[in-house]
Amino acid sequence: MTTTIESNNQEDDKQASEAFAQKSFADLIGFANVSMCVLGDRLGFFKDIAAHGPATSAEFVARTGIVERMGREWLSQMACAEYLKYDPADQRFSLPPAHAPILAEEGGPGFMGGMYQSLQSVENGLFGKLLHAFREGGGVAYSEYDDNYWEGLDRFSISNLKRSLVQYIIPAMPEVLVALERGALVADVGCGRGGVLQILAQAFPNSRFVGYDAHAPNIATAQKKAESAGMSDRVRYICLDASKGLPEPYDIILSFDVLHHATDVVAFLRTIRASLTPGGIYVCQEAMCADTLEGNMGPGGAMLYVSGVLVCVPQVLSESSEAVGPAGLSLSSMREYCARAGFGSVRLVAFENADANIYEIKP
Image (cartoon, rainbow, N blue to C red; front, side, top):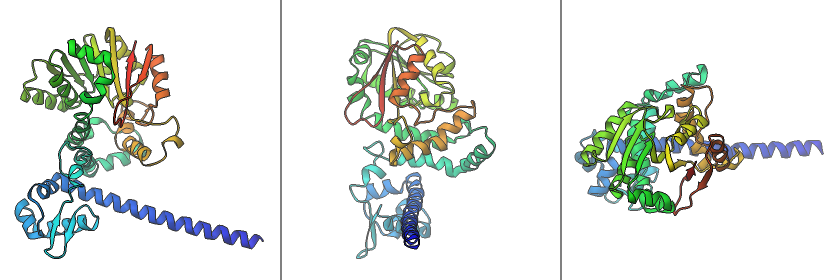
């Protein structure tokens, strides 16, 4: 009987090992495919095929001006990975129409180009810094992330908000909508390259907007964008670590995927509360996540934690000994942190096609 049980256990272990080997190989292929997508985005390959149509390898390299042998290898890999289609009859490669919004249409629904560009930061030397952070501590400061991270993050996040911020999110908060229409003074804390305020400024001409970010290159880029859009009379940007205090009170304060980067979440929230005018509202976006690791199991949770490993946690650990992480601000924890900071109410805002949690928070 014992021999039979051991034999069954060994067979079960063997099958489990084989199944995991298949999964790990599939994940490896996925990583390789993403690396090829980084190249395709940065070199404009997907956009070329979408704009100019199917091409042979020779036609493709003539259009893009690249080395033929390199282009042929990339096209072949993308065809094998089923990102591109290949027609053996005429040896042409094409981009399926269903793939174009994700790979080639800047700012379109599901567009991934910004995320691919952000991942380029890892390939551009960041990985060695992460190894050091694991072994020696000290984290990785935001200043260590190159321009591809910031530009890619902006391309990814703002393309989503262009389709949801004014259309769904703001209307789901009637008091915020009325204030913006009437004319409010609005701050965006951790504004990055300024896209959120530019979306709002275009939709709400009676309001004035100020963006704060501690990373000087972001502020410089945001200001240039505002000037190019003719918004500099109503939109301005200031290089400032807003967690240490804001220079004036605001009717509405925004933070989009910023709170989990705070070195002290409660202190950050207290600063926000102290900077609101009477009747002011804090609008905060954070990831959809559960209270427990088991509640986050699956692809969505895996993506949250990889963001934590590559960016969010090492950034905070470069300044502090504790880090919340992108999966650390569930609804219940948000309510707890806000209560400790002195806020009176936290409402989870329901709106169409939500892919993150939006909180309407009042003193």
